[in-house]
Length: 246
Image 1 (tube, rainbow, N blue to C red):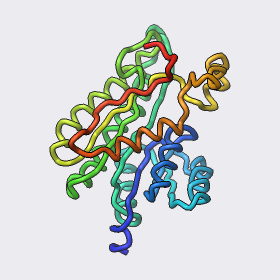
Image 2 (cartoon, rainbow, N blue to C red):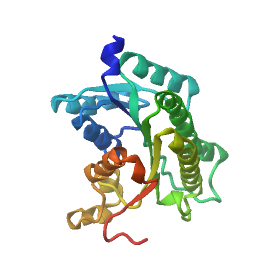
Image 3 (cartoon, rainbow, N blue to C red):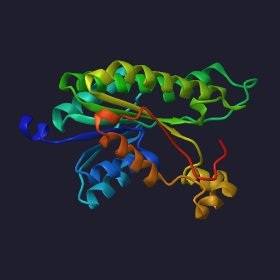
Image 4 (tube, rainbow, N blue to C red):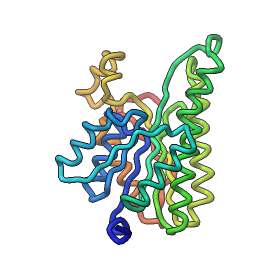
């Protein structure tokens, strides 16, 4: 069992939704990586797992709460013991929930921070400890415009995304010299998702003009970051449609 798992390369995607996270998992699977994907509900992962397997890849879905330290520890231990070493890690939890600062509740503010920032600390730390012992690995964080500037009505989300960017910076400076590539991806623009199609039809209408980001094209950049030679590592990569104002 040990020799079989040692010969495998695993990508762990925390927050493998139907768009960006799923596309990243599929992209790495095409390169021969075992895609380990998580959401809080394992049932929602089955279509993604089935699609990767139908394409000839290997995939495993895990129902796991990234906000709970015990869940994270069990997840990483299970993958490393039963499947293979985690060579690439992607943190892709969003929690983009708008609310006026005058109406925001302490409970919701904390929940958004817990989902989009604290869980990033728990999961990346657990994986980093394994990577450091092997002297290699890639850790990638999905960021957002909110990680660079806080918009009106998005104080909670901006605080969480600023936090995850700061975490990524600190980790990159500490772990880079130990051969762990840490990078932060700023996704600046609307993504081709069911949510955008239903909630912002006028923005979704720009899809035919390449006005929103395609998940598959985002995923290509994650693979690019993972594949970079260490004499030219990128820390921060901005992705936005050509017509996006910034």
